[in-house]
Amino acid sequence: MSGAATAGSSVKERAKLALNDEFLRKAVKFTTERLRNGKKAASEQHGHWDEWRERGRQIRLHTIAHLDYYLNLFADNARKNGVHIHFADTGAEAVKIALEIARRVQAKTVVKSKSMVTEELHLNHALDSIGVEAIETDLGEYIIQLAGEMPSHIVIPAIHKNRYQIAELLSADAGETLSPDTTVLAGYVRKKLREKFLEADIGMTGCNFAIAETGSMVLFENEGNARMVSTLPKTQITLMGMERIVPSWADLEVMATLLPRSATGQKLTVYLSGITGPRRETDADGPEEMHIIIVDNGRSLQLGDPEFQELLNCIRCGACLNACPVYRHIGGHAYGGTYSGPIGAVLTPALKKNVAEWDDIANASSLCGACYEACPVKIPLHEMLIYLRRRKVEAGRGNALESAGMKGFAAVMGNAKRYKAALKLGRIGQKLVVRDGGIRAKLGPLKGWNTYRVAPSLAKETFRERWDTLEQEIRAGLREMDPDMKERMERLARERAEGKGGHGHG
Image 1 (cartoon, one colour):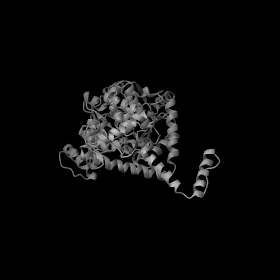
Image 2 (spheres, rainbow, N blue to C red; image 1 turned 180 degrees about the vertical axis):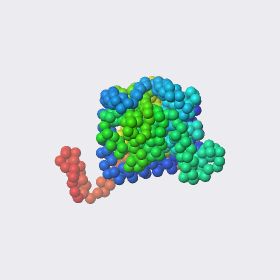
Image 3 (spheres, rainbow, N blue to C red; image 1 turned 90 degrees about the horizontal axis):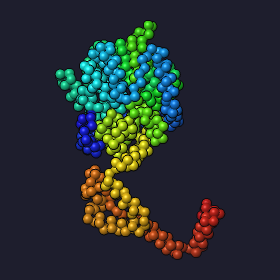
Image 4 (tube, rainbow, N blue to C red; image 1 turned 30 degrees about the vertical axis):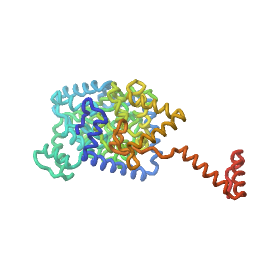
C-alpha cells in the first residue's frame, strides 16, 4: 500500500485496502501490542504514573498558554550560544529557508535523523529538486525511504512491514540477497550509512524538546544515528515545531520520564542528547554552523481555541496510536497524511487550511477514549474528534442521507407513541432479514457494518414491556407473601419515601 494518500480517495477506501492487506494487519497488530504491553509494564513499575501524567499536563498547559514568552526566551538564549534562529510562518517558508542554507554551503548530501516535521514539509522532495541527496539514517525511516512511502507510525515509521518485506527492499538496494535475519539487515544498513555520515555536508534533525532557559535542544533516540548527524557534518539544521518548548531542564525531567515509557516502554531512551549551540574551540566534535528553523505551519491557529489548544500539548510519543482499535486494524497510511492515529485525525485537519479535504478522517475513530487514557499529558482527543465532526456538520458539509436519518431518529425517539409504533413495525419488518438471531444482509446503511460483523435483531420484548411483566410478577408475589413480612416491607417502603430510614436489616 502506498504511503501517500490516493488523490480523491476517502479514509474508508484507504482503510479497505489496509484491511485486505494481511501482512500489514499482522505486522501492525504484533508491534502495537508489544508497545502497549511495554507501556503498561513501565507505567505500573513507575508506581505514580497518573501523578506524573498530571505534572506533564500542567507543564504543557502552562507552556502553551505562555508560548510567545518561552519561544522568545529560547530564541534569545540560543542566539547567545551562537545558533542562527529562523521563524517560519508556513511550511513553504520553512522549506525555503532550509534550501537557502543548503545552496549557500553548496551541499551535495544531507544526512537526517528521524523528524516528523520534515515529513510534514516534504523536505526530502524539495532537497532533491535542487540536486541535494537527503538520506534518512533512522532504520525505520531508511526502510520507508527505499519503499517511497510516508511513515506509518510516529515512533516506528515502518511498523506496517515485516522482516521479509524489509529484506526484499534492502536486497534490492544491496544488489544481493540478504537474509531476513534482523541482525543481518541492521548490519547492512549500518555499514552503508557510516560512509554517508562521513561524507555529508549537512546534518538535519528534528527536536523532541527545546529548553527555554538555556536555548538548548534535546533529542531522544535509540540508534545513535542522531548523534552522528549532529556531530560529524559541518552544518546542522534542526526543524522544530513551535510547540516543542519546555521552560526548564527540571521540566524536561518530567518529559524524559513520560515520553520513553509511553512510546516504547523504556525507562529512558538509549541516547538522550542535549545540544547547546555549535562547536566551541574546546569541543572535540560538533557542527561549525547551527541553524534552528522554528515552524508554525498552522500550529498558531490552535492558540486561544478552547476546543483545540490542548492539541499543542502533544509530545509525539505515539501511545494513542498503539491504544486505538482503529489504528491497530488499518495502520497509518489509511489516514492519508503525515500524522496518523487519533492524534493525526485531529492534528491534520487542524493544521490544514482546507479543512473540508480532511473532513472524513475524524470518522476513523470509535470514540472509545482509549487515546485519552494512553496519553501521557491527558489530551482529550476523543472530545476533539467530536468537535471536528460537529464543525463539519455546522459548516454544511455533512452527509445528506445521514442528516435525514438523524432527523427521523429524533422524531421517533422524541415521541413515545411513535417509538412504540416503530418498534412494532421493526419487529415485523426484520423477519425478512433476520437469520440465526442476527441481521447479516448488506443493505443500505447496514452494508458497511455487516461487511465485518452482524447487526443484532430487535429483542422480542422491549425494556418497558419486560418491566411491566416484572412488576406484575412482584405484585403477584406480594399477594402470596406472609402478612407479617408484607406489612414490614410496606412499612420500610413508607419510611424510605418519607426519608426516615433506608438501611433496615432483616
